[in-house]
Length: 386
Image (cartoon, rainbow, N blue to C red; front, side):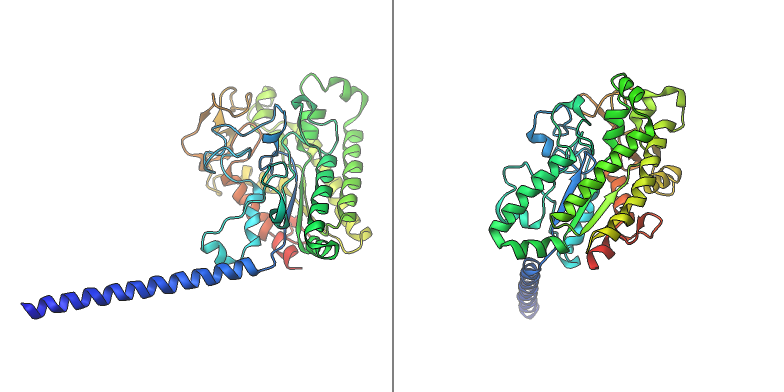
């Protein structure tokens, strides 16, 4: 009996030693990999756009367009100013800036909003998010919200960041950082929804300017803005087109005569803009030395999701998960009085205007690794490797 007891004790000691060795080895490996992660020269991520990619800039301005209240962010941990239940498309794409083993160790990286007080010092070397809910290509876009940061002002803010980075690492290193970094521009929806198509308020503008002239004005302005970004040092630039805005719950509820179909006019305007934007990208690549502009066909991705929603695992392609009023839950923005659907993963749309986290994952994956059906002349992963 004594021998059995002694054997049990020895086995217990041996087991503990094995566990200690294993723990020490895991800790050592983790620290070593963490050191490698920190030591890598990762590209930075500079984000321009509207509420589709805003990470909280509107939290710091006086605006009617805000998402820093429940139930927004319900799957993010808290309301952060993101206009969705979880992550934005660019949050998900941002993971490519960490090595795969860094991701497996649980490191997270979300590019911080420009206006956050903590976005300063060495933090900006990893990138900054300038996007603003309600913002547009044209400076008059979104005026119904009061405060918003349109694309011209976002680029002004990038100029400030550039000077900050130069003061930290010098001009040459700054330009080298920009050369390998990812720049993305996701904007244009508000120029239609909250400008040319604004209910009642847009009637005088529609009488003065035809849809073709309005789209032409958007493209002309965007051409200047993208040229300016290039002149400031941006080289790898993903430009997203406008999605099928006639299919969002807001447009469906505002145009009940369309029944169960998407609203035609907003989609026609988006497609007109997208056609010209698709031509603009190769034009910029040809005229701007060293540039690599990429056309992200978000319209095509979202349309594919809506047409094949069952294949993608969705059950509700037309309605808002966060809802309060309207057949499709599209009449009132998501906020504290709103109700939330039971299974958010089954809804294409989080609120009257924006995709859910589940949709954003699909969109991001198409842009990261998709073929030229969805992103051309190369996908984001190929762009970063080029």
